[in-house]
Amino acid sequence: MKLNLAFTTGAISLLGFGFAQPADENVRQVAIIGAGPAGSSATYFLQQFAAEAGVSINITVFEKTDRIGGRTLTINPFNDPAQRFEQGASIFVKANQILYNAMTEFGLSPTYRDSDPVMGIWDGDQFVFTIDQSAPSWWNTLKVIWKYGLSGPKKAQQATAATVSKFLRLYEPEFFPFESLTERAQDLGLVEETGVTGEQFLQAKEVDARYAHDIIQASTRVNYASNLAHIHGLDTMVSMAAEGALAVIGGNWQIFHEMVQRSGATVALNTTVVAINNASSASPRKPQYTVRITSGSTPSANPTTHPVAFDNVILANPYQFSGISAGEGVFHSPIDEIPYVQLHVTIFTSPYPFSPRFFNLPSSARVPGMVLTTLAQSDTATSGVGGVGKAGFLSLSMLGYAINPQTKRKEYVYKIFSPEAVNAEFLSRLLDKTVPPTFIGSDSPISWYTPHVFNSYPRAYPRVTFQDPIVGAGIYYTSGMESFISTMETNALMGKNVARLLVDKLQETAPAKYRNGLACEDEQRILV
Ligand SMILES: Cc1cc2nc3c(=O)[nH]c(=O)nc-3n(C[C@H](O)[C@H](O)[C@H](O)COP(=O)(O)OP(=O)(O)OC[C@H]3O[C@@H](n4cnc5c(N)ncnc54)[C@H](O)[C@@H]3O)c2cc1C
Ligand SMILES: *[C@@H]1O[C@H](CO)[C@@H](O)[C@H](O)[C@H]1NC(C)=O
Ligand SMILES: *[C@@H]1O[C@H](CO)[C@@H](O)[C@H](O)[C@H]1NC(C)=O
Ligand SMILES: *[C@@H]1O[C@H](CO)[C@@H](O)[C@H](O)[C@H]1NC(C)=O
Image (cartoon, rainbow, N blue to C red; front, side, top):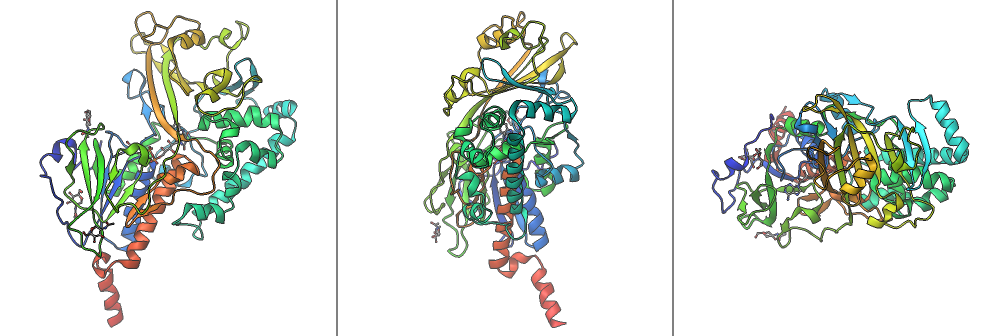
């Protein structure tokens, strides 16, 4: 790891604590809390915008885990670093320009294949639709039309394209940066999508109800763990806009790692921020904040005050889970609590294929390597854990292969998304082999097993107002973006947005001393 680790846990104790010292007056001190996509992008662009504007800033990134990436999490079967699969955010598209451009600029390479080409949609009783994505596209188009008619798929595609082109205007100079996400959602006409459920939105666009129920709902379930009646129209369209999906070879986290590294920021890993307070030493004209930190990811009883006080703080994680207490007056108004989906993502390896019997198929049948789900005829569309319906899980996929170091044989790598932890009974039926309650062990059909629970993304209930990014004097917040659209790209866009707002504000208000020599140059020009 090549990060500038000036503040690893070990170093912290050497610094002396208890009070914050006034730092170099000519340098703007900025704290970024959280190094997921939003915080990494904020760090990267802040550094860039400040350099372009000629202002001196000093960025300190605090990250409670020991890695960069947040919900972008790459894991290694059998703890072999050469074998890598995504347990968190796995795909993005070329239209995601922040990620795509960064990937290209950083010399990282894309892969376009992240699962088995045969995809089936399972409703707990039967496969309602199967498609082989390696077959010619005309054949697949015919298959869809055969089952759902022409207008459903066509109208859904038109609606998706129209929504995407509205959204992409958010990157244009006329609309970027933005102080209010609520206003931008209105300016761009995207409240048309966010204000209603996916079901209502698709109905208004005259998309065939059966197509919506089977195909589109399978996408909202795998992408946002939600049925169409419990997710807004915008996230529904985002779920449909996955054509040309790609991932970074070796792990998506590398984009964020490079962003942070290239910014030259000081990075404090294994460091949890537990409090933000108004620094009592601050001059009235210049708000300054102190942050209290603990080492490690579980806040200890002994927080210390970081020695540098900050002019700006960017909160780049869902505040409700951050464990941060904000002192009086730090926030203008409280940060909204948002209902997040708890999602269990289980990755395991096994030499055995999925059992055809589990899917009520004849024993000679080949089970699709990518199983998405929808509701059964008898299910009612609810939200929360029960919303999973008769299928009992949201998706099952064969991600690829890994070499078992013990047997030296190639095994399948599987991933399951479910609203509750999977148990041995379920896995035994899925593989048609007895899985012990410990999952692994000498006689288990499972050779490697790693579950992870995420507060994955908000339950995207219809809404037309969003948490705006400026939450206090010099304090910015990125996660309001998530109830609008929750993706790596959109949160990175919000990180870039607050970076732009921050530097714009500095240029507006900063005394000449922040401007790093530019003021002098101007004066000289005037004199000449
Ligand atoms: C299973 C899953 C699949 C997904 N699939 C996709 C996908 O395919 N494509 C896509 O684009 N998006 C996907 N997403 C969504 C995507 O991961 C998120 O939208 C994105 O990671 C949000 O970025 P963020 O930086 O705002 O938050 P996070 O990624 O959550 O990063 C926040 C960071 O802040 C740190 N932190 C929190 N509290 C503190 C504290 N007090 N002090 C210091 N640090 C703190 C955390 O450790 C974390 O590293 C998926 C998410 C999940 C869970
Ligand atoms: C973070 O903590 C983990 C676990 O305690 C440790 O293995 C790792 O080396 C630490 N990393 C840093 C950068 O301090
Ligand atoms: C920049 O921030 C780091 C960590 O917060 C601090 O150690 C360093 O002294 C700061 N540098 C300047 C020039 O203020
Ligand atoms: C922070 O403290 C300063 C100095 O004590 C005070 O002038 C300012 O009003 C305080 N700010 C807030 C937001 O409470």
